[in-house]
Amino acid sequence: MRDKLILLVEDNPDDEALTLRAFKKNKIKNEIVVAHDGVEALDFLFGTGRHAGRDLSVMPEVVLLDLKLPKLDGLDVLRRIRADHRTNLLPVVVLTSSNEEKDLVDTYSLGANSYIRKPVDFVEFTEAVGQLGLYWFQLNQPPPRPGKGA
Image (cartoon, rainbow, N blue to C red):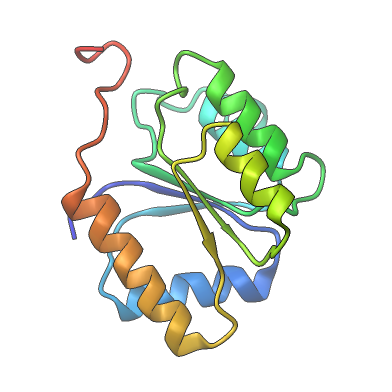
């Protein structure tokens, strides 16, 4: 897989480890930045807080966003991403264990690109992550970045 940055927004250490293991097992070697809550995710994206001064020309190719997050939930993170011209076209994949239809409808209404329910079984999860990597890093044609032909 090409070397493109992934922002994983996940507060559960077990789900984080499982996701990282699944990426490794699928030979997805992209750099993965992990944010453990919604505020940290926005700090990374907008270069604030502990990420103040980071090079904002380096943006994730895709954001993998859990919904149930501390400090600021995933829906609020998605709202902020879509509201800012620097990130409004950034692909966001909701990766959640939520089975609530309201969450599904709300995420698509707010502009999520995809909604994936985390399979409980590691083998199924590993397969899903492999398909996700294949699609977002090899098949998908991303929109141009602001300032780079946008």
